[in-house]
Amino acid sequence: MAPSRTLRTRARLLEAALDLFERQGYEATTTQQVAAAAGVSQMTFFRHFPTKESVLVSDPYDPMLAELVAAQPADRPLIRRIHDAFVQALAVIEPVESASARRRVAIAAQLPALRGALLAATQESEAAVTHALVATGADPRQARVAASAAFAATGTALMAWAADSSGGSLSDVVTQALSVLVGEERPSGERP
Amino acid sequence: MAPSRTLRTRARLLEAALDLFERQGYEATTTQQVAAAAGVSQMTFFRHFPTKESVLVSDPYDPMLAELVAAQPADRPLIRRIHDAFVQALAVIEPVESASARRRVAIAAQLPALRGALLAATQESEAAVTHALVATGADPRQARVAASAAFAATGTALMAWAADSSGGSLSDVVTQALSVLVGEERPSGERP
DNA sequence: CCACCTCATGTTAGTGACTAACATCTAGTC
DNA sequence: GACTAGATGTTAGTCACTAACATGAGGTGG
Image 1 (tube, rainbow over the protein chains, first blue to last red):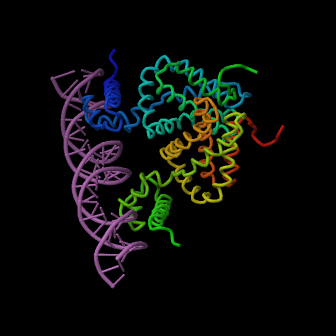
Image 2: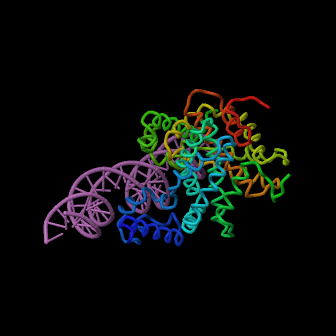
Image 3: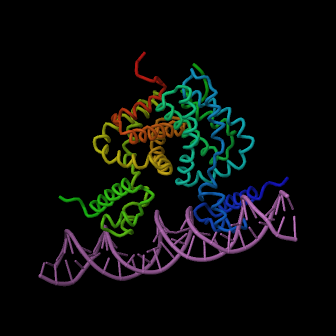
């Protein structure tokens, strides 16, 4: 069963866009070129991706994240709950997305404007997590702050991960980043 | 001594832009209209503000922040140091900027794209703070994560502050936001 | 008071992201 | 082999932003 025409076109556009971005740079690549390389018109590009940026930033995992956050025991600190939910989410996401995600993040990490866009794009996810926390009785203001901090930390770590191709699994990097917030700060790892 | 022509034009543009944004919305306002309202050409607008967004997001305080961060005792946790530096910085910034800043943030808080832009704009400040921390011997990765988390939390709190005009001083809001990260989570405020 | 020099500004023309409206074409259905 | 819905094409336009060159106003030195 071949994927629907819509999905195939979208995949061709994504592939063409990543190729061109990597080869000639994001800014030097026009949406026209991407469309042409995928064999469609510019209009079709914009029907599949609302903006040029959106090729690099997509985040269909909000509902799962929110669920996982809500499932954490409510008596633990907010950031700890978010931390644990993220780690659980990564176990699911990593095997599927790791390849394409790294390409996208690596491209985005190079341009300040795109780094920002990537961070900005997490806002929906942030809202979802915040909502999940508030539903368990958390103070709304604190929940929002905790969520934004956690996403910022994760996003920052993600870009560092994509930039040094030195490796380390996605999970490891994110876990390390979040543990800075949870309060375990030590250059190496000994426990008092 | 009257301010230079450059500064006067910039001030007129800023005022005209805020007025129009508040009255007819950010997206519905074109840079042409802003320029016309300030009595200059569109070209002149872009000479004073590199982008339309930049009217709402400006951040000349990076150097001070970095200095204050560097001045914190190096044996304290990263986030605690950032927290203290922010509080000290606000004592200086608040009296000067509070009025215009609130207008700008209030406008930006309404549009998701602008909320993102505002968060994204803190990246230079983040870099500055990260650098200051690393200079004191902190682990670069941890420093970056801590800085991004702190700025995200602050930015989020800022937007909440500008949105509910219910008041509370800028310092209070930011302090509360950061204390979520420092690990003092309590709905209200009693101290153990 | 005039020539002069420097910048802020104006003008024009262009690129590129994105949108609206309407025409067309393709994939599966009956 | 028509039939219909959704994917695509075409065209024309708006708006943010840029490059090139022309003009204008301000203060300075003579």
